[in-house]
Length: 243
Image 1 (cartoon, rainbow, N blue to C red):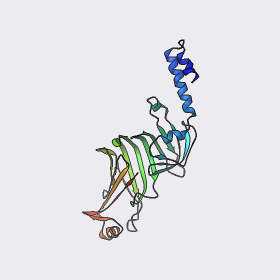
Image 2: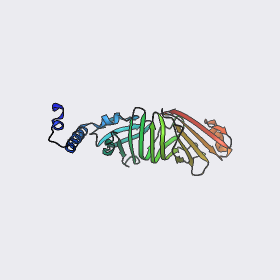
Image 3: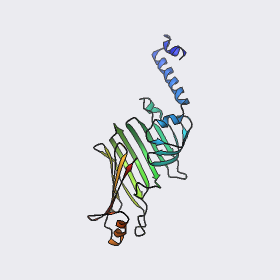
Image 4: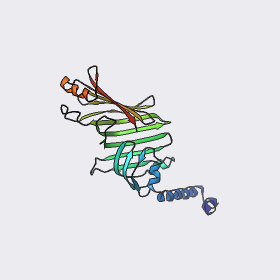
């Protein structure tokens, strides 16, 4: 590489100058790096197409695991590079879909999400659970060695109307935490009669347990016929899958 970087071997240059020139060389390389190479390094991110340079580009039909984020702008964050950790910012502006922002970094066995805010529609639900959308407020997650090490912020799930007797969507929300290496988000509805607990293993396996209490028999009965199970004080539905 031009005789192993001539400027580094030149004794007339100070150490500070050599460091600055080396940093400029790395920045020049990153400026030419395609964004698709960066995105491919973050586990769980897939897309139909990735265009533009690493610092600022466009991703079409981005998915983070099962979450369809749609078309977003994205690029490398400069400050995390100083500690050798490539981190991507993601922004979906509020046009056809609701606004969404996040920072993401990851590698073999580890994942870091931070500053996750916004709503993600889930037209296909979650394994039989009629989830219409998932929401995040200042959500952050750190996974190391396949285990949840830190989680904070709020998450919410909005369920589509369950029947003609329950015609309104149900929204439950709660604070995220780690419990013995598992991401746990216990959520509750505004009325206090709707509860949903989401558990996500580091491997991506998840379970969601929904409990509804205080429903009259004429409402709960048809839901039991639809697959809900009777429980003390109400009915419930349990779903599971793999992200």
